[in-house]
Image (tube, rainbow, N blue to C red; front, side, top):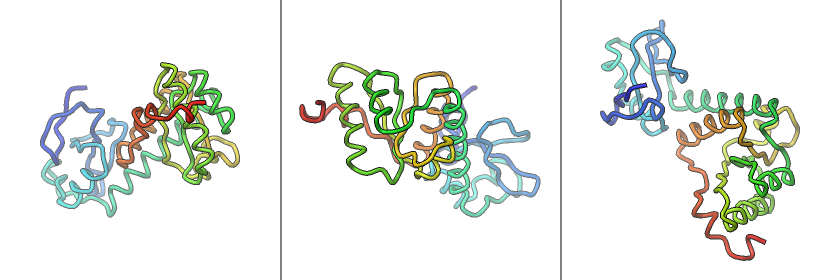
Length: 211
């Protein structure tokens, strides 16, 4: 797709960096995450701050050339939709064998180079996270890939999406279904502004951390 202009910043960006909105039949602004709803659309940089600003100033009415109004808490609605999309994609990836569950299997997937990303539940203990982080650092220490870690979902959300119980740690594997799911996870992370642990933070581990 050609570049689109954010109605908040007035800058042109690739469409994948933006969220499309359209006017609904009830006169309310509707997020169009799949970019396929009919009618005139407008675009907002894909993070919560820009969506909230567009809603607060109702920049949609001018851009859509219609007397539309954003729903209350539009940013929260977009967050919910992105979260559901990510969890749904993770569920499909799990069925396709592209997700590993459990601390031991996640650590093994990281050390073997099969993991594209790691997911920690919000309730994950520091000790459980530390062991997997040590594995990530060990891979970097050996010249392997930087494996990002995300902490976006609760244990209940992950368990429901992945069809298991007490899911605290998961690894997304580098298969097609896994790549599709990871793309959704990254979109949610970007929208929330809670960036994944940077590769540099992994690489700066001490010798003790990579044992």
